[in-house]
Image 1: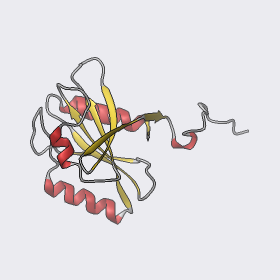
Image 2: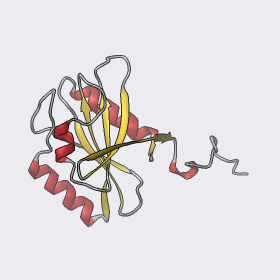
Image 3: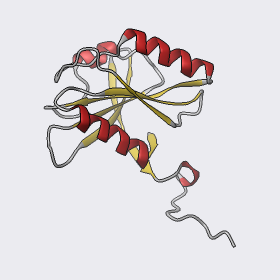
Image 4: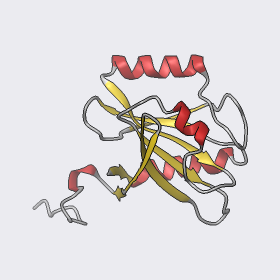
Length: 151
């Protein structure tokens, strides 16, 4: 299951809408081993295409080095589909190289609503997973929907 803050979901969707009709792409870094997305990094789609994305190799190297030096890892790798459902294409699957990452797809084919789905992709096998959007990680999985009183 992917547990992710609402502000990060909103930022991914905004990026996808802004780059439409081309596919948007990026990474959400988090502390190594935490499986907790924290820091969204918008990346350049080197293909500038409505049907394909590829990270710019120079930018990717820089971002991965920054994550490494900050003891972070790519918890989420995201991109958009502009005219199809939020499901990984064969090309998406072939490029999935981070075995621990959540691969999030945002479909912007409908101008009014978006579709967001998350997958694990390992050795060419795609497994959809539930997405839990939370306001804060502090109360994730507790059922609490309010901040407690601080009297």
